[in-house]
Image 1 (cartoon, rainbow, N blue to C red):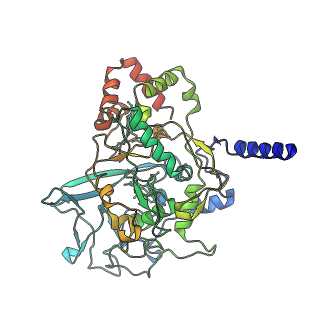
Image 2 (tube, protein in one colour):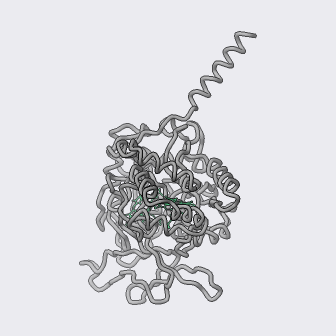
Image 3 (tube, rainbow, N blue to C red):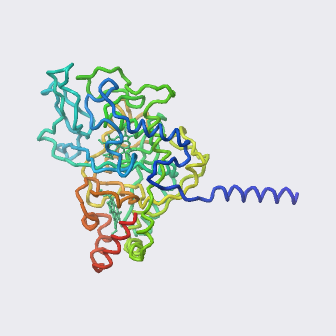
Length: 433
Ligand code: HEC
Ligand code: HEC
């Protein structure tokens, strides 16, 4: 009996030790984090970088020819200054409505999305007389730009348990005496019809799954229809059969490769030299003390290996399980006074056949309440970003901080009370991230 007990206690201890979070690998060196082997990661990266043409399904409406065109700085999967245009208008009752954008001289109206594509494949040799360029009509008065986000390390973000984010929202609200209460938004997992998860990707937390996001991006950024988004935005000038994204020789579709590529990336690495300076360290203390860290949370841990996420479609492997990451973000939605007034377009992000009855626990009311909220921008890798905030309109750290109002107003006030020297130390900390 004693031996049995001792063995049981010992194995429990082993399990506990195995689940002690360890640091997630970081770097901008295109190495796999262990989710797949290096050769597989390199071939997935090649798919992410591949420049597509019309015979492969590009367009009819699109923004760019490769994922890498927007996710590239300092390496494939990083962020960039490339912005996208989103518009809409308010109806008579003051509710946000998606835009109606006439194309082909009014022959067709594009609806159901707030995104406006900046490029189109025609007129071309096959359709010399059809021009389908989207142009914003005067009526669409709500307008914003949104910059391209970093994807490096997002496999770890996907592996954070929903409950961790739910608890974080509750704790920050309690600790800040209800001044700062991040919103958790449940969103559909498209590859698991009927299942939802806590949104964490995109400026509006529109997706919880990287595969769902990849399907969304492939259609809406590049015009490539796929198993999750099988319907073209317009059939004008369209020549390639749907879905455009078909399994390759390896049996995988591109969106599977994109999701696997992102899942296997290392998290952004800090500037080790800058992080060692006294100035950055003092700056970090101010960052924590004045309340930046309430939303820009330094450390989060992923769920243990073996946990099933994304509506039952993904089991977290050892490479992603029980890892500590430093995103300096909470992945929750906040109103910091910068909100762009745009409610996420359900058809655009969840597909033409999306019916909310199928996702009974998905709430359109919750969605509406995010109109003026933005996800806390994770600050990992922020030293490499030249234009800040969702619209890229803030060019310096000072400008970005001073724009924080709403839930962050009292924190911004503390910042304005800091001595110039102390503010510089805070910036030195940001320059080390
Ligand atoms: C024309 C530029 C552009 C292209 C091309 C593009 N993206 Fe993006 N991507 C963006 C922008 C802008 C955002 C932020 C969108 C938003 O939330 O409004 C984004 C966000 C993302 C995110 C969310 C990241 C996070 O941490 O929140 C993922 C994942 C992503 N893109 C994957 C892809 C994949 C995969 C492709 C290729 C199929 C792709 N993107 C192509 C511009 C682009
Ligand atoms: C209430 C939550 C909250 C607090 C407190 C907060 N932030 Fe933010 N922060 C955000 C949100 C939300 C965004 C994105 C806003 C947008 O893009 O419109 C953001 C964006 C930023 C950005 C831009 C990053 C990028 O990639 O574009 C920086 C830099 C930043 N915050 C630094 C700080 C600092 C420094 C403090 C403390 C003085 C602070 N924040 C306090 C929520 C917060």
